[in-house]
Structures are given as structure tokens and as C-alpha cells.
Length: 369
Image 1 (cartoon, rainbow, N blue to C red):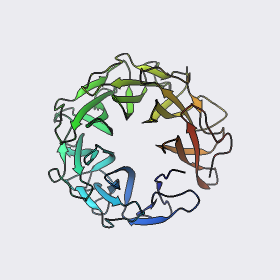
Image 2: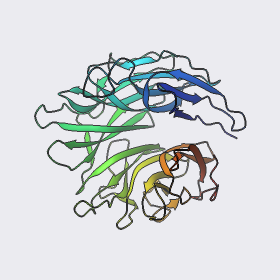
Image 3: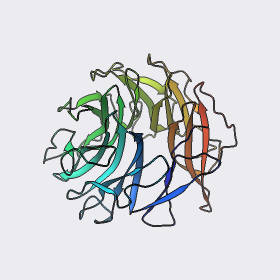
Image 4: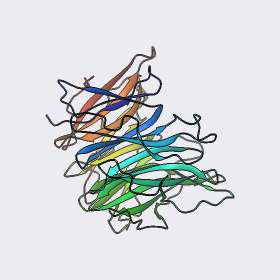
């Protein structure tokens, strides 16, 4: 069985990230990286895995005051050893840096995050890290989003990043203080560190809100998916799941959006996406079943931009457990979907199922704990 990397926050130990090396499911190994962390993410390349996180060791637990959180990283080798137990500081700029994401671009790791240093408005910054742990960009990172106006500034937040053919695509949501209408923006970064879109591209700007984007790299470009509020009426919770393909040139190939899952009077959002070697797969939070709570659904999108699974396939069994996640990873054969579920008694467990390249959930109604 191919190995996968699993990591989580250990709720009972403040300031610890628990992680395993690449492991067989029959004999997992564990390691600990001490820090006060939030939102860990990881990518593998160059013989190591790079774990990145928001770190609160020096600042207050807020982006609005003090000096924290900040962005740190650590490498993990193929044997599960943490090579940088103290962490590699990627950004310790004033105010806060949060919500990191990371990809391997074929030469180095590209780490991106939302950054509060610019006129007290979030902007998108990034840094590149070599497999030997060297940060090869300027201290505290480089700007990816456009300069933020001081008056009625924009909020550039929730970045995600993926790579394809020597180009990385960073995507994020943009809004303003005065208008509740988010759009999805993006910028490409070449594997030599060149920002190809110093003026970021507007990838999606339909009516209503487009928020919480995700991006996956394929053989000839990218798939960007997001929660879409174009069918909302007033304050309804109707969110749909849309996507578009983006070419390596930055061209948006599906200007009207691909309707991945449109379900009347229901919520679909917070997607995660990857490429499974044949199609894109998207997994999202879904509220269509009133007898359940916080379900996850999934669906495939072809390289030609066609949804292959109707309005989606149920991933999680129906239950009133509070489900957090999902996290997804492709092991070369199938996609693992994992999540944390909590009952009313606060009994928390981690679960997972396998989602096949054929769009079928392999573990039925009994997910693997």
C-alpha cells in the first residue's frame, strides 16, 4: 500500500503539532514538533516533506495586535524525522500572518499566506524554500497580491496554491470593507521565482459572493473551485459549488463557471481539489441532507471541464456528528478523504474513506477510524 502523510492538531496539548512520517497503515510512526500552531499544511518534493503553519510563539493570538501569528516551516525526511525541530521562520513581519498553503513547484517549495502588515488589511505574500531548508526569497517574503489601498482597503485572504509544468497558480478571495461581494483572484509564479502576474488576474467575478477557493494542478493547467453565492436570495444559505479551468498562460477557460454541484436551498462550499492522474476530484462540505450534519460530498471533473458525478457523491455516512475538514490526498491509486468528527459528548475521532478514480466510495457506510 502506498504511503501517505497524516498530520493533525492535538487538542489536549496546547502548542503541539502531532504528525506521522510516511507510514504504512499497519505500523504508523509518530513525531512531535513543539510550537503554538494553527492551520498546518504540507507538500512533498526534493526528497522531503515541508510542513508549514501559523506560529504564535512570539506574538498574541490575533493578527490585529502584537507580532503574531507568524509563518514557520519544518522539513520531514522519508523516515519521518523532523529535520528542523525549532522551525524555519519564513515571515516574522509586524502584525499577523495566517492561513499558509504550500506546493512543490519542481525545483523548490512555494509557501503562500495572508498577511496583515499592509495598512492593516490582508494581502497575499509568499516565500520559496529549497529542499535543504534554505529560504531563497527576501526575509519576510514577497508580495503576490496588488498593493492595498489605505482607505476602504481590500481584503485579500484564504490563499491556496498548486503547480503544473513549472508554473504555480496562487488563488485567493478578494473583498472590501464596504461591499460584501467577494471575487476570486489569481497570480502565476514561475519555478525560478518570477511573478508572472504582478497585477493579479480576476478569475471569477459573478454576481454574489465567490469564496473559499481551492486549486489543483493537472497535466496542462489548473482547476480552481469555490463556493458560489450567485443564486442566493437575501440572507439565504444557498451556496453552490462551481469551478473553472485555468491554462498555464493564465487564461480562464470557463468564464461562466462549471456547475460542479448546484442544489436548491442548500449549502455546498469549502472545497478541496486534486488531480488523480485522469480527472480532477473535488470534495466539499454539503448541507443538503436535513437528517445529517456537516456532510462531505465529492465529484470528478474531466480535463475537458465536464462534471462526471451529477451533483456529487456522498462521502460521509449520515450522522449528527460535527465533522471538521476534509483533508484529501491521492496515493497513486485512490484518494483518501479524512476528517475529524465530534459527538455531543465531545468524543472526537478521526475517520477516513477511499474515493476511487471511478467516483465510488470504497468504504461504504463504515469509514475507517
